[in-house]
Length: 304
Image (cartoon, rainbow, N blue to C red; front, side, top):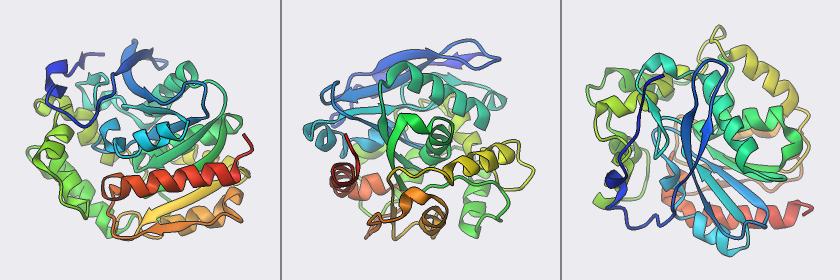
């Protein structure tokens, strides 16, 4: 598998993400080892909070949440998915599959995370993170989900997603920062937009970002539809605390929180919330609010 590595200099101008990257080698059953980056903050002996990003972002998306969680005494871990951030970027579209992403994230998790963790997931962070919860429920003490889900393709995707998927394939130059800008409510600075573009010096680096929308199970015969159905069987038995904190201005995942609440028993008795004045990238719009909600969720529901 041929990969590209974004040069460190691409990140040198970023002033509001002071976390040094750590790296582990991950592999699947076919490819050779590739490098996956992650960031750690807070006391390493604290309860682990795992923050998983989605498309087309990287751990920078969590820069407003990380310091608050670390200050509260949590061991905060935020990986860059393969193809994003400082992680290696395979150059062929065919190198990226949903199944491979699950394996890569699970390999990273098993190497880095000790004991149980609380997962916060958004976008593809849920499509991948919830698979980990389903496969290893004993490793998770709780979940907080925002603007995400675990689709099987048995329900037709809404028009907002269909339009997004079409745009992602038709656009000549994949605009990472423009996508973030278009799916937030707040105004983003030029420096912030540059930080979202930093991992992708040119189009060759964007294979993972470009293919992600096509990997979402949007029809019942998707290669990972059955795997997600099997995952749902296990999630329907997940009784540990599970909270939804979807935003009020994301047409792609609208009402997804109600589905999670209706199917996952861990949602029962939890005070769910809707984040006001926030778009799809809720961490950008309301990162500090999310961090405080997550702290309250853990402290009031977890038996640590």
